[in-house]
Amino acid sequence: QTGSAPNHPSDSEDDEYITNVSIGTPAQVLPLDFDTGSSDLWVFSSETPSSSARGHTIYTPSKSSTSKKVSGASWSITYGDNSSSSGDVYTDTVSIGGFSVTGQAVESATKVSSQFVQDTSNSGLVGLALDSGNTVKPTKQKTWFSNASSHLASPVFTADLNHQADGSYNFGFIDTSLASGPITYVPISTGNGFWEFTSSSYAIGGGSSKKHSTDGIADTGTTLLLLDDTIVDAYYNQVQSAQYDDSQEGYTFDCSEDLPSFSFAVGSSTITVPGSLINFAPVDGNTCFGGLQSDDGIGISIFGDVAIKAALVVFDLGNKRLGWAQK
Ligand SMILES: CSC[C@H](NC(=O)[C@H](Cc1ccccc1)NC(=O)N1CCOCC1)C(=O)N[C@@H](CC1CCCCC1)[C@@H](O)C(=O)OC(C)C
Image 1 (cartoon, rainbow, N blue to C red):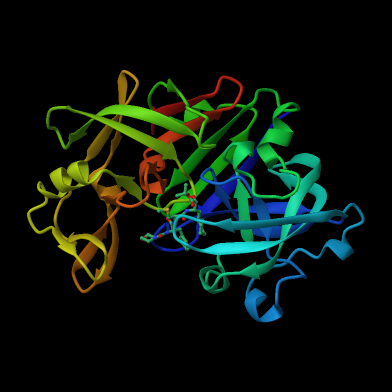
Image 2 (spheres, helix red, strand yellow):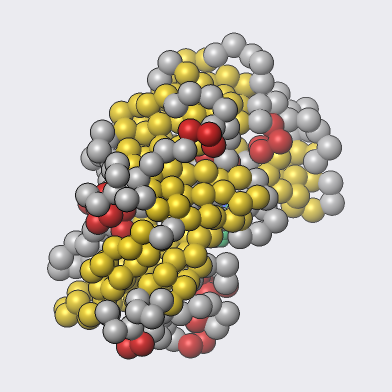
């Protein structure tokens, strides 16, 4: 068995990617943000204060004949951008791209931080990192993909994210036609619960490859490509109009400047992010904000959507490895 679901950017900046998910019987369809950087499936619900839920689609467990309350269970999560949410837990049938998981933990939000209230693009998240990162207490719950994997044709899923266009999340199979180059696999380290790998070098534009070991995660829930300062400073050194903008907390440059590409090693191959994807978004007038920024203060590098958009990414749980193919 397999599943295939389309995704689309939430806005004109590709800030996040949204996929419709069916929950319960009859199906309640919610637009959710698939996040390979976390491990909780949580939703706005009939238990979310109505002032906070305004503008969001909600899950109402009492309207689902297959919902069950997990008595005594609770959850609470804080993300890298300091947004947060918490609540209680149900199990219900969750279908993604035509593949159904019964008894999936659906975490119902009784509290959401202001960023979630304001971001009406999503009605919650589908965590697709490793099970160890799940926050449900007293009994950790499995991710949708973990529950699905034993029934899927193959314990893999792929992320195909595109700039201002539809993409897909495929489960149980790899559609190599989505890529222009071969898939190169690298092992993941599972200790932190992420899809974490090491990249050994990088290159800027057509320049020579520089040795630099990057310990990073493939994270569909992070908008940008966040790397060490040395790499980021070296990149914007090649952008004549670039400057570090304290108010924007990142590098900005003249929107009309042609940006160099950025390449990172995946095993013995490289993935090249075109400069056009690094011209992330206008901030004001003719000034634009970079899609490559510093990972300062996060403690790990993040290959977020700006990097993933350049590739087909294979999340291979069976072999504990990540695959990257140029698109
Ligand atoms: C340094 S990590 C920051 C990362 N957040 C982000 O990347 C948010 C995502 C977002 C988009 C639109 C609206 C609201 C939020 N974007 C962001 O901070 N941006 C500021 C710079 O311009 C681009 C948008 C993050 O916290 N990612 C979360 C998932 C994310 C999904 C959207 C809701 C908020 C939570 C998760 O992947 C995570 O915590 O990863 C850890 C491992 C860092």
